[in-house]
Image 1 (cartoon, rainbow, N blue to C red):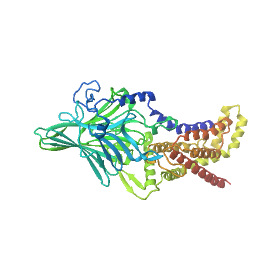
Image 2: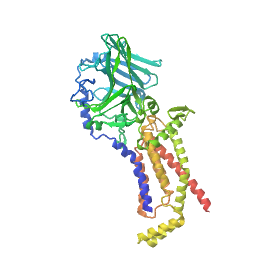
Image 3: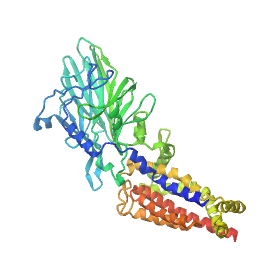
Image 4: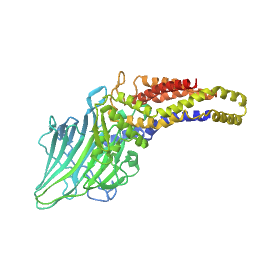
Length: 571
């Protein structure tokens, strides 16, 4: 039975390490040199971003338009500067290229790149020698303005736009196609990361105007620097989308190395996901959209594209092609309102059914806003500190498991009480292991002791721990969120390892309060567990270690109190 006990507790260590193993699965198989070579190829980008009507091309399958050679004018640095439209809102600082109307740079003003430099915003999209990640869109086909000869060259009333005190800002890019006037309009809304991208078609010609809208995300495979931390573990980096079969489907870059993904769906979206942030094209739900995700054979870039069904504008009529682009933090409550399944980009792995309520409760404690069935209820002001919210959440979880802990500590107390009898049995039957096992089981039955009763509560609580691990790893709200004292970022590991050391010490105290195994070898193994756990927790986010420290301290207090009560009853 002591072997069973050691096996169960050792399993806890393995389950704790599970979080690291899960992240290892997301690690890209190609080494860093391969990524550098791909990036160098991308920096010499000389390929058009326009899908073509022609079929049977070598760069894509027959049922999806392909990329062609870019023929646009190569501009000097001075003229390149004038080809960019600069936009500044409360959430964004971005650049739109007049050639094609693509977003080639986007920084998140409310998200700092580094905690130490809050004045420098986090850059999500950029096109330079270090990183290639842009959002493109256009119209092609019978009357499309993006063709194999090159992208549409727009004009604008200004090269600089600022939201200021307005609630919305329209940035219009103009293109004249004979008697057809086309406006590509970007609409920015205050305090929102969703950008509406509409084509306004005014057909003053004598013929119907007919074209299709496409949008795509194009990115190299370079991993953001801040995503690789302790023990080299990295979160998921790659595409995701919604299909007819799956509300949320991941398609990694390594998947695209092997084959192209193609499907169609009414509306839908395609997203590029990284730690804490994502970008996503969201298509018109009234139109059928063909999706293709693949790796470009020419430059090694990863491409996720959607093409909406044709839009026809009759002579003398006006029409609108609608889409939207999200670029910002993985705010699941905002994302779920944008499009079905997009909120699942906040990925809690297979324990999502536990993690989702935990996040909702944590969010409620901190902000005082409860989210239920797609609705939000502002109930109180919230504690306003994610560290204190984690502490309160821990106390609530411990309260829920109090009855189970009472049974566990009762079992431990009984085990401690029969320790002398177990040692006597070992002295008497030490050479006959079968007889020793039989007599030990008989003693357990006589005294009404469950030898694994003290371990079961810990095993039951491990799914809570793992689910909370995913919550704290995925919640962008904890990024750069301070607690108290030396903890300035709950999403990063403790810089001085104070919390992990406290956790290890508290685990050692817990171990001393439990009955020791009669086997000296097993006892030594048990003594190493606090050391092993402390090593694991050195690299965990401070918020997670804080949860476990509070959990241990409350457990010690509960065990002391319950044991004292049991001793009083038996006296």
